[in-house]
Length: 567
Image (cartoon, rainbow, N blue to C red; front, side, top):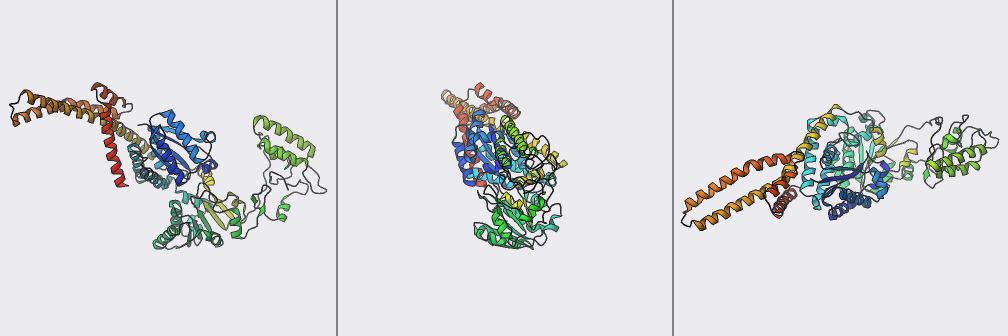
């Protein structure tokens, strides 16, 4: 076995990198085709979800395989190799099997124990089978991973260790309230009709929302999902085209979005317009959603410098001695380029007429210049003292709840600035689940994974020697046939009964001589480090390598036919 996996996930990379590296369906197909076309790989499969991108391959060279798979991931994701490399992980042989089995059981999920990953693994295998990039190794591996995942869910309480991403997201939206109580009577808008969106719609129906509207680019899929929901329970469901989303926003209480779009599906401006909220353009051209000018002015102390036109759009802070929006604490941790912008603004910062400056602007500019020099030397400014906490501005109780389960994101992150709107996305879910308690069932699942990895490795190693054993027995049968033919030439007077007895006797002798060695070599080959026994057998009996390879090809062809028939 030369199984190699190269990938990145929510455990190794920030959400911003995962978002940029996300692969749409066409990119996944091209990645598979290019991988098997590359020299080190003979099989390939891609597992791409909202929080992981992994490329599995059967390779003949480890280092060349790592280099090639990493390069291909970078090329097809659009993220430069130098930028991507620090976030990549590599697993080989048994460690690669252990990783996939853990993923299948939900141990590596953002929400431990979620079962959605099993469907995604199944889709990954189906895609590789359709493109004929999955051979015997990856077919066996992924099918066994599905069995291991199902075993973990049926034999343990791993489901209690976490929920699906949808359920966990709704819990975060509900802010600690009981989800059915929070959801009861609400109107929901689900954008998308794929597997995750369908799960979201089914979950919303189960927790008691009154109405679900499905918006999707393909009308038939939206209508089908709405029909299923209407047939299944008490919820009222209907399908609408995507261009009706803005109208539906005016009625919705909850929005869940998970599409395969590469750009934003809901911009902050669209949400604001749909809810009748005010927006003001920020200094960088990106909309900034703020309260009224009077409300902002009320937050500024009378003797404090204004933040208006500041290139960094710094939030106002308390006017306490030794700290100001212009000072050291406000810029601690900024990059040198940002400091230069800030210093230039400080030199010309307007102050309200008659205001008394807490810190002399010239001295303040000198401090910032010194900090900029430090940043140029070490990259960033170390925080020397923590700013005083900014007074929390009361926000109205949310009336619109947004759950973004897409990667890359469907909903503009800027909507969190809108009053009365609560957004939960993949990034905030990752933060919320980072410290989730691990149930005792997780340990039981880990033991299952360890046992299954050992069994899979043993079966694979045993299977590796089977073609050699078959070739040995074929050679022995050829020798028997040759010797019987030779005997016929020497003893032409033998009748059929005599010839049959002699033939059977010779075959029994050969079988008995080969039985113990071939059984034992299969046992030895199944143990860790047993791969060398096949080579030893070929050398000892001078077996033709091409004969062994022909047996392997025949077995692989039979396996492929069986897999295609069952998929």
